[in-house]
Image 1: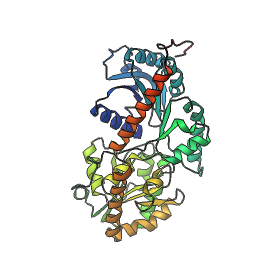
Image 2: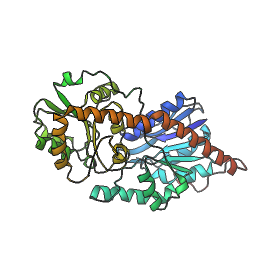
Image 3: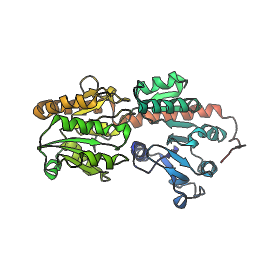
Image 4: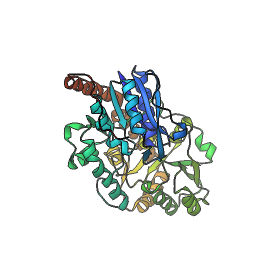
Length: 392
């Protein structure tokens, strides 16, 4: 089966990781995948590559970790590419772009089945400006998502929210994020020695308001963990400079920045006595799943599906409010009782193996592809229709 995958390659974010992991795994299972993604105009290619091309770039005016603004001609180029590629199915890992809203029209006119993966973070309750903004994103997208053949979400909570907003229940399919448990697994690591830490705690993610990293740093400082404990901050983002200004002088806080080398990230997660994710809103954090797979004891807020992942003993679940105060109590317990972190690390690994493996994710996705493709075959009584009145 030939899959046209529309997603992101830069800048680095969970959507990029999701697209890379899924498409690589699909190709390993024998699928042909053409990756269509946005690039700056000077680096974009016209969508006139040969039909065996594995990558097609579309012009964009702006890209960020959150949203994308395509160039005016990107719609026409996408149509041209799909006509030439003639894939069996289009899978859009939605980039929060205006083009997302046109995809159902484009694919219907070309008689192509269309599946979306809907990533935006959410909170089950609107408790802050950030969670309210994310809820508005769901409200904006719901009418459009109703016209996709299927929409993949990561949790029952996310599905229920979209159903309340009018997306038909049969359209929604829950396929959680999955992690490669062969690569991400417990094992030896020299990271503690490299960092001069007897105990190591890790945050991995963007340094942006919705991630609530300042609450983590404040809680760490209030907990007074001592110099033998280190907190490694992995990632970058718009708040990096201001956070370093207020917390950068403490030598027990290590600012590692964005780490492109995957093995280095794995080594840090293997060494971690605790992994902390204080987000105000989330989807289903791949960073959290990676830490769990590496056997780290995990602390995360109940934003998005993260609380669901850690429920019933697989980790510690925090309320999104008063995160600093909760961490002030919990972190010293982790420091003083390593037997607790070891137990939680084992339970975290078991939870991932039971529910969140990439292999199981792919098997569900393959079944969905076959189902949607069969449904499309029943709909088609003639060749592809011609697009009319289609704006760029």
